[in-house]
Length: 344
Image (tube, rainbow, N blue to C red; front, side, top):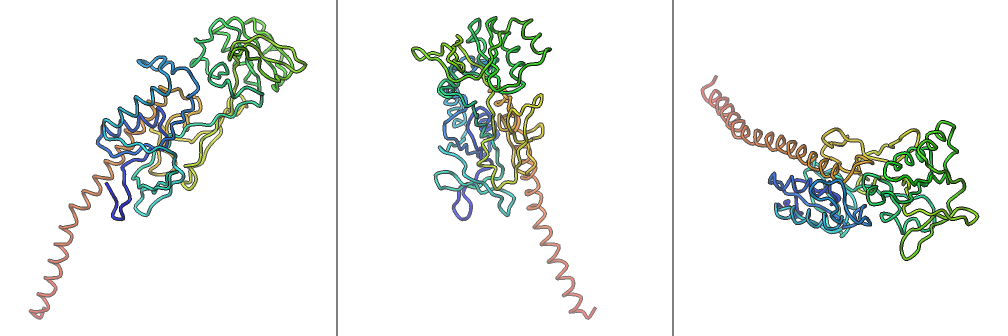
């Protein structure tokens, strides 16, 4: 539907077309809502070989999962705009004007933010090039694929010990590289030793790669330790471009004093503190998995549709009452004029 000035109007605009955004769009389309998904086609998990722990989609490449999602969404009338949301601002009617990166603008009654996170990796040469391949962060996403292989854990904070103990579930050959983390206390050392986890002191200066495959970690001084996978803890921050102008604030997610990243606080339905704006997926939960993001998108879509139903009902009631109000006003006016004519 177009607005009076010709600008395309949607019930919902979704900023971000990952698992959360596409699941929301699919749900909204099936609810007979007009929906536009704005996405640049650059998923956070793009470098990974496959998506895991997604029932019915185990091992599907990330790009293929999104392609399927786009087709399914389109089958119910959902639209896709390639690019990003550059900005969004509140309109006088309570909706939003959404500016797209290609210069166009559209109107939306509601806005869903599923822009995800940006990962800031530790400053080690070669790390970014192996990210999502042998440089990993989530054992539930990638642990099975590197089971029983030599696994290194790059410690950049106090959570390094806990990471090493967790990854020990997938391999007996785990080395904790202390790198920039504080030295473990006696209790931590005892737990590591009890699980057979080796400690390597000193900074990690680089990676050893042979035939396009990670084979080791190079420490200061040149000593190399053989590993086939390296676990890191990236700082994951909200992709906040669309938040500018909406008044949305982010919060830090901490665990044992270590900041894991930032997120947009939401209620259980995904509603933010800004009326009319929802958020779902990693933008609202740093630790969310792909299947969890899809579920969060579906849940947010249902809440948004319910909110729109309530608004549609209020408008219908107002429209129904308007003729009666006008008739009553005319009757009152005629009565007053009649009284005047009769000298009353």
